[in-house]
Image (cartoon, rainbow over all chains, first blue to last red; front, side, top):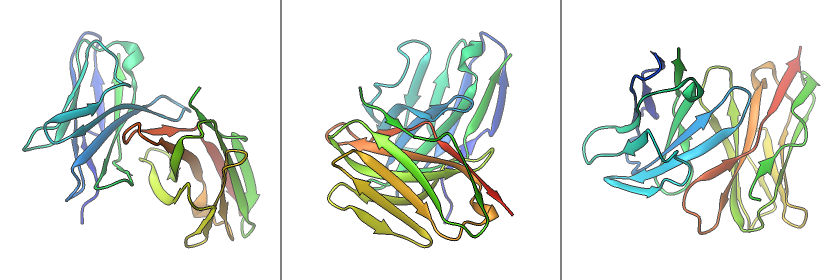
Amino acid sequence: NAGVMQNPRHLVRRRGQEARLRCSPMKGHSHVYWYRQLPEEGLKFMVYLQKENIIDESGMPKERFSAEFPKEGPSILRIQQVVRGDSAAYFCASSDIETQYFGPGTRLLVL
Amino acid sequence: GESVGLHLPTLSVQEGDNSIINCAYSNSASDYFIWYKQESGKGPQFIIDIRSNMDKRQGQRVTVLLNKTVKHLSLQIAATQPGDSAVYFCAENVRNQGGKLIFGQGTELSVKP
């Protein structure tokens, strides 16, 4: 029974490039959440999605960031024109009803 | 504002002792709380949760206590082992604010052999 999967695990981008982070939820889970973690800090909520719908994007920066969870395939967090401040660990979680289970994260480094 | 914080950033205990990790929350509308364990380079791992209609819940070697009067949450780990060394986060879900979790800063638990 596979857990939440994320790829890539590590991603290096130069300023101005695009970053695409993927998340496959646990089998049977229809709710996906994205969080960002800066070094030595707690996780900060970004966005909550269900299949084909964004439920809550109150934690997502208004520009350059977008997320989707299509009917088929993984959820994607997309960061356009990355800047050094985007360097962080990005975690995806999924749930069926309430308890959120996290993936291993994608560590983004912007040079 | 809405926030969850931890009293101590680091905690060092002797192997075999009991550990207590504390958490304060500020939103009285929070109705669901979770403790996560995060090891270096990994994602948060679910430990135990508790709803606001309970004041205590036990798992294997762990107990969570909830005091709604003072908005305080604690995680007790019995017979702490070296494998328990990690950063522990409490998180809260605020009623009627959807599924998002609000995380505290974390407490780093170090177990001395």
